Image 1 (cartoon, rainbow, N blue to C red):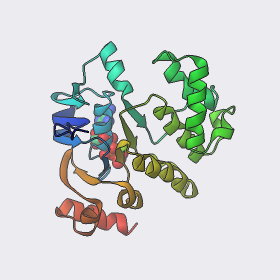
Image 2 (cartoon, rainbow, N blue to C red):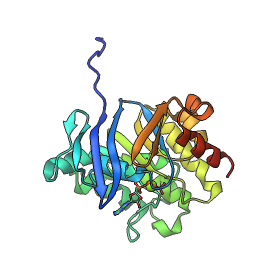
Image 3 (cartoon, protein in one colour):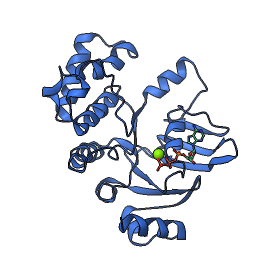
Length: 251
Ligand SMILES: Nc1ncnc2c1ncn2[C@@H]1O[C@H](COP(=O)(O)OP(=O)(O)OP(=O)(O)O)[C@@H](O)[C@H]1O
Ligand SMILES: [Mg+2]
């Protein structure tokens, strides 16, 4: 085997800027995430974490800078965008499952419609994924018949069904009842262990400590500092991070 010395980042965000009117919501953002790396993004409300996630998935336009997924520049639109977007799995705070489709259909829809996978194969793959996230026996049900934690695990399976190169999670547990948070975090920790490249917006420090390679702290549209989780939580450098962590800890 040859060692790959030319390893390029799987996600590369270069000098990205975005405004909402007067608000400079992303200010010269630079972020590189390597294959297999797990990056937790943390920061006060309104700091631009969700906007950054949506920009990486091109659900938001950017004004300046460039974003590369596995070396390919995210295009503005068209077929190539659809293809690249399939490389980026996204899980939101609200599960966004299709209410009138079964759990199984929710997971098979993307592969069948976007990737042209035949139904039997899509269903076989979907059942394996539902098994992996622990909800296989719920396959024939509708989303409303599942708990929030179960629905979020389905949302993760649905994203994985597209065989993404990187998974983005935007506060995946913040809408859940406390007793359901761990069942979702456990699935995410497992994914991380299996080598999935992940960008995770979360304030769950337990997850960050257990699974993250790096914590990125955002405030006011900027990346203020980044460090290994232990380092960041025990010895934050910036006053913004110190302030934020003290509030988080005293909640
Ligand atoms: N579509 C939009 N139009 C105008 N302003 C927006 C829009 N979306 C977000 N914003 C503003 O941009 C800023 C950053 O929002 P964003 O949702 O990225 O923050 P966040 O860090 O994810 O916050 P939270 O922790 O509350 O989820 C906020 O001030 C928000 O009000
Ligand atoms: Mg957000």
